[in-house]
Length: 132
Image (cartoon, rainbow, N blue to C red; front, side, top):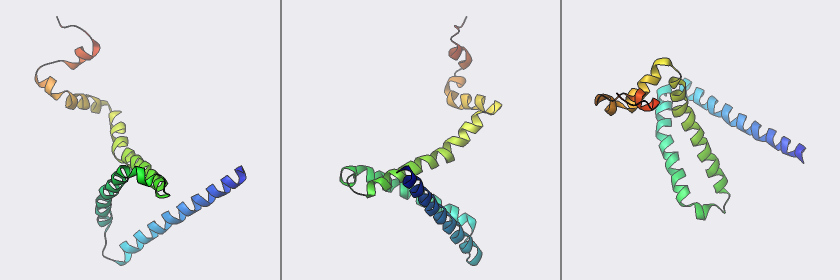
């Protein structure tokens, strides 16, 4: 039975590869033979991302009705994809930037800006030392 599962998985990956190649080919053909630019693709993606997220939220509300249908597995997969994309686009750059030496102090300054403007010293608060 594991042989068949591996074979099905290979077919699944082949379908994924075919879809990705087809999408890239369509994008290249549109850029090459029409007046569509790369920025048009970016702006259309920025328009479709909130729309897809809204559809996922509506599907969450309709969960009691959709959970028994075939559509629910697709909705769950799409929600996981959106979560992954959010992590890559938003959280990964923040994590990478937080490793830079000067960025940590800038994050602390942004986070505790009101306390800095009142004259508090955050390092003393964080280390637990009492003021004299």
